[in-house]
Image (cartoon, rainbow, N blue to C red; front, side):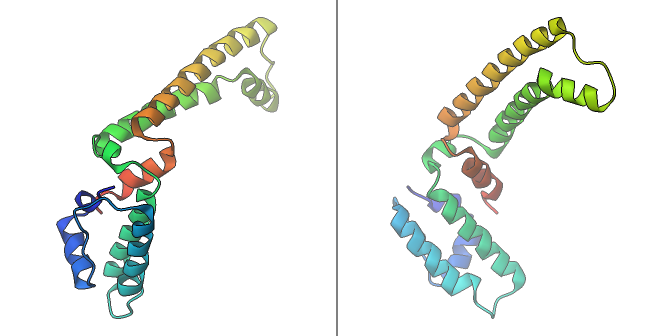
Length: 163
């Protein structure tokens, strides 16, 4: 995978200061790990740099770890804002599943000293929950196809992009 475009000009200059050149080429996971080790040794643990620079090197290192878990070419088709909107929709759908679970509702009512759902209410909410669960699962599958299987790594990628 070609990672050069995922670094800001400032980051490229910082890396050059520690004799690391990010080439315009496809890196293997093994090459990424070697690059990681070199940045760690030459930059991050250098006692002569400021905390601020060490923090920037740490964030570069975090991104390198993530690069091995995501398809950068796929992710570069989308912006951080697009991912955040998609993530928000998935969160809303997830809450629809969690909050409309009839068993959870009954536990809450029991703990509050209120009467439990009638069987009719229970079945109605159970059916709605089944529909919401299916929507959520389908949307999550859509996100995995769009961004990649490891959505946590994708989230971390966008969170750390261009820092």
